[in-house]
Length: 357
Image (cartoon, rainbow, N blue to C red):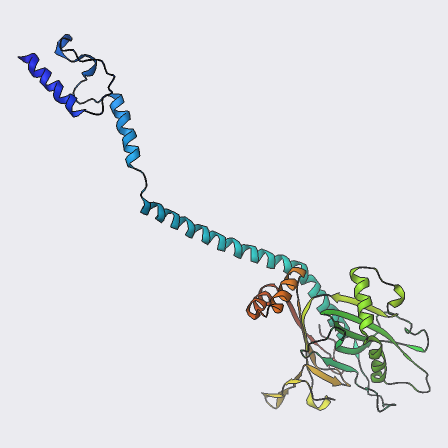
């Protein structure tokens, strides 16, 4: 009787394990020692290792991702990847801008320092005019925005300064002076500096400084001269005979803007065609002189505000392509992010005062 009950209990355990016990198990024998079922009989509450392995495999198959879970995971991955790409693009743009500034910033600073040195040595006179048709102004400034043609030269600044070193006149004749005419010119978005030694034709008819400046200006207002200097500076393949006899230097090739604003009392202006700011009162009977971006005068101004904008070769090419597509927003973005701007205020000494930095 006890044996029958034990056999019935074993059968119930086997029925609960249907589908999990391998089919190649040995047959069950009822006459095993102790009244248990041989190999198929296990202690109560302890499953077979094979049963555990089979259950784990089926559990793994049942724990796969659903379609909704997969779509959600892919969406999250795309969002993270897009954010990383945006950060990388911003970092690349900042790095490019920084590299461009490192290359062009010293050039812009050198131009400002050179111009400041020239202006600090500027001179003028009040001599009588021997030729009424000559341009007698000794300081000429004109930085108004203008669209230059392919063979046009712009002269933003002309003045006379003390000669840095004794020099002979460029013609080889005449009576040399210790003065140079200095011109800053723009041709094809490139900035040039000319230093022309001055000389009298004779002592019997000495020209005023304004007349000498006008004569020198006619020599440098030549497109072919600037083409030769640019070819010599960039390629070095040009006939030396085509170069000028005076000093002519290519300062920069890609000029975005070259702005000059001079302050001068109204009573000293020779031409009133470039005033950008009228005379203003500062109180106590004092006034602020007008500002000019175009000025002709026989005296030196009180100050000159200089601002220059340069571009690297890569940024300049991108800017020109944006202008070619009439993409104003892209052009403005390039100018804001990649343009190198340097500015400085240059003051002139008053009568009898010391020179200011």
